[in-house]
Image (cartoon, rainbow over all chains, first blue to last red; front, side, top):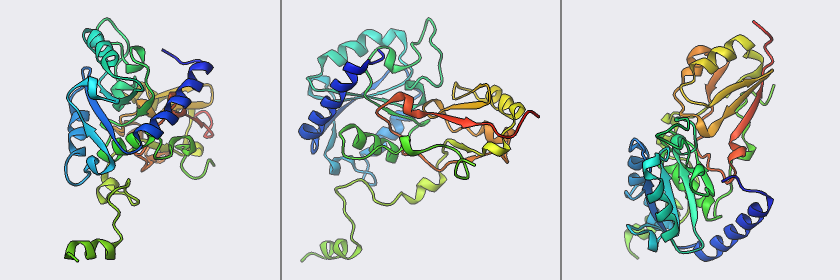
Length: 165
Length: 112
């Protein structure tokens, strides 16, 4: 599901709509598509008093029908594909899909008869959060980026030590 | 005025926004590597690519292609070339475009 220019424009419009509608309250449904549960461990920490994502207006919900954002972990095992699609379709519009962790981003498993290898192969991903696992602060920043409250840092990073010399 | 409110004002803590300062624990997080192009040679890069357990590193001619999204910050590349690779310290890496996570690192250390 690689987006073309028209989809990119639609996605930008959708992000504005999401920032306007969900700037202060957003419900998150987590979806484990075969992860090792390290990402889940970090997601669980978000609700603890130290990070406390509720103060930022983010809430976890057990039902996709109440969810605005789908937080997907794991390399999308093929056995879970139908459930993932059904979860996505059950969510009301507008909706955001966030791929979480190196597995979901396609870094750990290659596509084979058992796994798709990345979430983007099945669901249209809007925000990618790298990390293995992403720390709670990285997840919080990712959620901020998803609702347009925080600026992305990655376009400015080169990963070259010593100023590109 | 309750005491906790006065304390909050004094310390200037805003609890309804993303933290302005990083957590003290963030310094000990494993983070993706940053590379020193002058220390990178084609041979060390090929060894790093072979050591990488995922698909984060690959080489195209004299460029190291680093997929930050695929990196698990395991540190194996840093073990291959400790003088050329160091942790970047960056962990807030969320992106709205997958290609923005792919970084090109020039290899300036020659063949060897």
